[in-house]
Image (cartoon, rainbow, N blue to C red; front, side):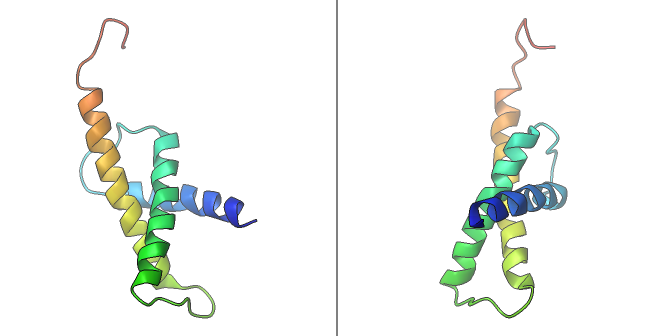
Length: 94
């Protein structure tokens, strides 16, 4: 059940991260946005725990904000890499 939760959270956090990330991020596909979200959740939770976050009762907003920020950073990185890769349009690329 934990894996499914992380995937669902990853989809939501990835879209939020894409929304709050600066710059042009329309050049990354949805699957990569979701991967950035899942990575953001995992990295965010790790950072949160490393800095003494122990999870408060109810919804722990600090942990989610850290996850969104991590996801936004990953989206910016992915967008930069994808932007470089798609900069050269070949004969078969429309």
